[in-house]
Length: 247
Image (tube, rainbow, N blue to C red):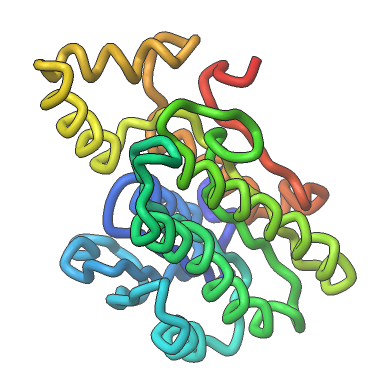
């Protein structure tokens, strides 16, 4: 898409401090949108050329409503919040389960619920970062994460049906394994068990039929498309961007 395709549009991006969220924010800025970003760690937002940057805990409905309430109009929302619990259901304590649900699914509920009333008069696009580790495909040691990212897809599809008449489109982007600070942290934890970072990197690469990791910028590209006029006929979809995992 050409630069400037989002000029005049107000976009909100959550978890914009690093990884996919930051790449999305940078892409939407480059495409001309007025971008407002948030992250639970406000320090990570430094250096972004966004219109505003606000520390927001997306699991806190009061904080989310306070942030979204600053905007009379929202044309695009990209919700990038997530947390990956590693383990089977036996490894997942009730506390782990609740944390996974709060970060992965409840945050989507809070942010979308706050944004929709500011979109109904104008229409717009809501994109949530889900995962192929969800209702799409089962992965080992992803019981909590897969369940709650699957819930995100279900929420997106229900909202797409509810707000089609308001010209608000809802889609989920489902990445495969993307090279990000979050992934590097999981690699480091796995390296302690496997004995080396090389072995940990191989573990993640081996599940990518493409033979490489995805990039945050590749995920940002589809998010920008969905926010643009080019994406106006797409709603209610779970879009796999996964390097061949789901072939």
